[in-house]
Image (cartoon, rainbow over all chains, first blue to last red; front, side, top):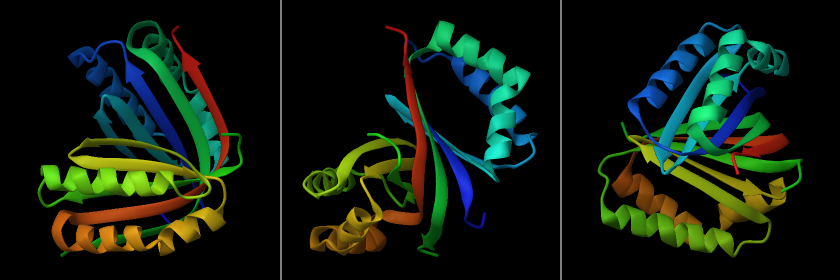
Length: 101
Length: 101
């Protein structure tokens, strides 16, 4: 991942946190991994959930938004799982890491 | 928060997850909240930790990077808490939310 690339920052709260929700998430991640331009995803939840997916360009994000499996998951998410969500699309300009090793 | 604004995406793994680490995080968040240009922060951890802080402009991010309390916390973090971290700086271009209410 060499900047510039793109990040979709997805924050959400759930109505209920159940195994079926995590199965849905895992299925969506697998589909995203097969999309052209997908660079990776980070995810964590402590009440508030944060998933950041990384993409090569805006084209890839648009294609993912139109993906049928993603659309179906989104409809299920709105109907059954999410209480609230927020989506931000951002251009990553700098990226560095540090390791204790 | 009206785009464009900026996001600092901080992902990390910990050597150990102890109350003293959460006290450090809470102190740093309080200091960030008093910085000019600070717009908010989202945070979650499930093994991997993700904190996304939002800022008015790159100026505010640079000033926060130079802030003494932040520098001290960073040194403590590297010495005692973090195993690994990665920082991305991104320009937020689109932002929308959905609510079940």
